[in-house]
Length: 423
Image (cartoon, rainbow, N blue to C red; front, side):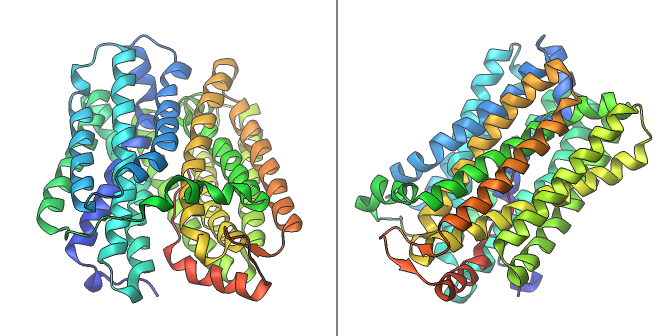
């Protein structure tokens, strides 16, 4: 059962807006990549490394910053991080060189690495115990909404005013979230579990099955982001897609992503995490194969491209809930929080790898992007199968094993809080 509109408090909407702002800022480069690279006199492959660096900084900084700021009130942490996020985006119009923009993206990533975890922590602390999972899920809808609304809107703004305006748009979103946070978000106690720090966060990695799932996450996200980051040049070569057409296509792909996420959750509950992951990954690979076939006969009409983009997005967004459920199946309820934190970071490592790989591929031939994406996701599916076959029982970080019934119960208990990101 999901949270209805009437049940959503204003402060929860504010936290969702904060998540929406940082996710929009992460992906917004996709729609303005060609203009940005031209104005800053770098190749599109080089410009795409802005996504790589952003993701890598987030992946490395999020766990460390979470520990460093654990003793501070979550509302204060959230508001301070939003101030940094706003500033780094609003000054982008003053930038005249690529290195300067890269520096600002590093600052924005550091801020985002605090904003999203702080928003989730605030939602957890302030939620009624029986609605905690649903409140977390509500905050995470900001991520999907960024793909459906934020990125297309930023693309339209960039086409009309200039690519710098897209970052200003993200900064304005952050400013609205900050103002609402100051007024609506309740103060919550700090997460004072200090000494459980680094050792407790890292201990799940020592489990072979958990490490396998983390590697599956990295490879899957890398495959998808290698394709997604360079979607604009790929579609321009495939079907001569204009900026405004790209914005519309991003809306359609966002709608496909929401559909895929919802269907994936139901599929996981009914058939299990591994089968859901294999199904979603298989559909993703099929979509990439279809793009490869279209590439051979380019230029192609816009209609089949739009249909395939919705297919790709639905499959890509169906993967994260399945992987997250697979992780919960591996660790049990006591270790789920630490393991999921590591999985979030591993997703950004995958995004960084995918951005770098995609930049190298697009410099050679953009048609290589869907082929390599399919290969990587196929490898990840094999890794997921191995992870389940090699350790069929749940193992928590204390080292105790649980039987299949307990594993299923752990998964069911955690699925209410499952996130929607993949990217």
